[in-house]
Length: 335
Image (cartoon, rainbow, N blue to C red; front, side):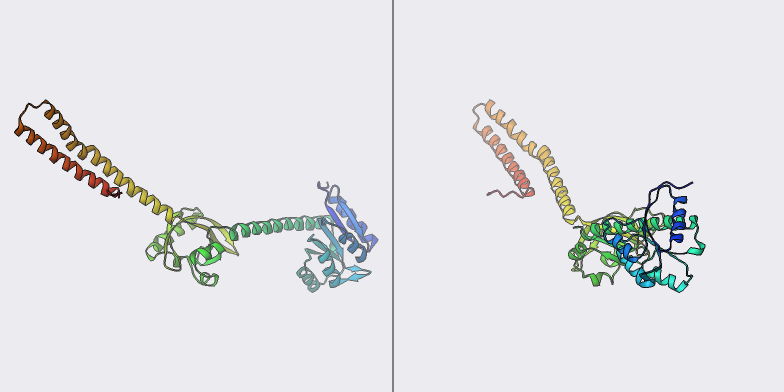
């Protein structure tokens, strides 16, 4: 039973009998193939030149009346718009077949051994291979755009050697190394020596089960020796045949310093609050109590003088406390 589909196929074949056989094979395996037939190279060139959308598959006989062999292959490949080309030939020449594949031919089938199944398998295989290659090309394009155009420093490193495999422009600009320098380095060289053992142990553990545990805040070194804190986000990838990790390193040094300053300021505020609630209230309470005593006091000059001395003492004590609070909050008394 024919497989569902309406594959758009160009058959370039000058022999009526061979074309009829190929056409029969196609209808045996494909429910509704859309077949275009070109009798020679000139006709094929005109068909392909006037087409904006590529054929899904091109079946090419190598012995056409107006062009044959390698020159024919080169010209059809150039006109094909990257459609897979399956060569159908009656001449079993292995060396020629290898050369034709090197020129961009997708498959090389002998007419004497051709069956509907072998032809259909070749078509399906080459369509699938084209799809996979297109997805890979698109994936590489997306990778390249995301990686190289990212404003954040990014790098790829090999899991076995920790050598840098790729870096983006933001990494070069931020860390200060040239591209040549970084490709002669490994990840250990941008980390403090004391952190390397723990880093390698964590990375080894991550690599065993492909889980990212070696994330979070880490210390990196710029070329000029500046120490920075970076938030690491990474993932496992295959890069140019190597097990690797792609990493984004966001500098959070300023943010951490700001948080530290806030924490120190909060600690001062907590101390000030304790001072206000425990120390300031004591002399203030005494002053308030003495004021009531003076109000109720009879005319006794000596007693009033003693009371006033206590008030002055408490006032001076309170003044010292306020000065200490001012010093802790960095407020200038004269401002």
